[in-house]
Structures are given as structure tokens and as C-alpha cells.
Image (cartoon, rainbow, N blue to C red; front, side, top):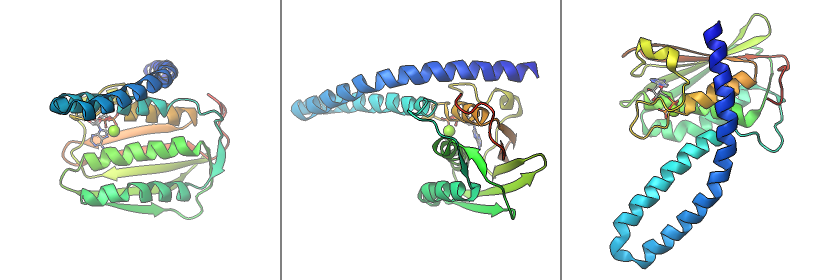
Length: 231
Ligand code: ADP
Ligand code: MG
């Protein structure tokens, strides 16, 4: 539909610009951080103020890191990959965090899932963003089911199903807009970058949710080469 097209165009622009600016900001930021650390150890009675500055710098850094996921790596390479391996790597990476929050992750694959053509690190980042959101949506613990299925027409579907707090219905169409967050320490950039990356893979990202019941994020990816490989 027209609305969707507008959204994806907006995302493309925001992504390219933000990634460029983010790169430029990172270096001076590192040098400022170094000086603040130096001052902090020198002027000990001002320590609390310097700590505050450092934590604000940390926040800037977090926001920039989220944008940099969109930045074109020096060589963006789309390769044939097995979803099984990607998911396994990602779950291993995030499992300690999940266990700490009393969240269990269950993975379920259909047989004979075909390989997909993808930029491995970017796709992993998407899966991490989605899993993190699910963990954060279950403050008292819960389960995440990851289901991988074949679809007709050379596509695979990867669903992440949580039983967390859910998302209000009127909010669902606006997900993916930059800076929308309901979290005190959130950036509201995780879903935006995820939409952008999946779009670059000629895929789809769909979110369905019910308040107090849970959220399902479905990523659909083509199993044949993407048409715009270096977007
Ligand atoms: P952030 O995690 O920094 O808030 P995101 O872009 O990752 O930014 O998510 C934006 C918002 O979408 C979240 O603040 C939250 O309100 C909502 N959201 C995303 N995923 C889920 C989920 N699985 N369950 C409930 N709410 C979610
Ligand atoms: Mg997030």
C-alpha cells in the first residue's frame, strides 16, 4: 500500500544519513570520554558530576551504536547461510541475559529449511533486537518460542513469540518509527534498524500483539538471491 511505501522510503533516508553522521560523532566522543575519565581521577571531589557526564556519554554511545548497525560495512557481503546456524549463534549470545531474567528460549525448526542469502551480521542484529525486546517485555520471566518454517514461493518464516506485556493495538502501525520507546533506558531505534535491514534483504517484518497476552514478531525472508544486494 501507499503508506508502507512512504514508510520504507523514509526509513532508507533516515538510515543513510544517520549512519554517516554516527561515524563522524564517534571519534570525538571517544576523546571526550578519555578526558572526562582523566578529570574524574584528578578532581576527586567532583567525582559525582563526572560520573553523570560519563553516563550521559554512554547514552549517546548507545544511540550511535544502534544507528551504526545500518552503516554500510566496508564490504557488505550477502552469502548463503543456514538459518539454523544464525539462530543458534544468536540464542547462545543472548541466553545468559535471558536466564538472568527468568526467560527460556525454545527453538523449533521444520525439516529441510533451505538456506537464505543474507548479510549475516546484520541479520543476527535483527534477531538480537527482537529477542531483547521480548526479554524486556517479560519483567517477571516467561517463554520465547522461535519457530522456523518453510513458506510457499521460496520463502522462510522465522517467528519470535513471547508472552510478555504486549503492545497497544493503536501503537502497532507506528512501530519502526525512530525514537518511539516505552522504556526508561530505551532508544526506540531497534525496530527501525530491524525494519531497514529486513527491507534490504527483500524480506518482511510483521508484528502482531495482544495486551497482557504477548507479541509475535515474524520475519519472512526469500530463499533466492535478493534483487538489491548492496542497498
Ligand atoms: P527500545 O527497545 O529501545 O524501546 P525498539 O525499537 O526496540 O526500541 O522498540 C520500540 C518499542 O516497541 C518498545 O519500547 C516497546 O514499547 C515496543 N515493543 C517492541 N517489541 C516488543 C515486545 N516483544 N513486547 C512488547 N513491546 C514491544
Ligand atoms: Mg529494543
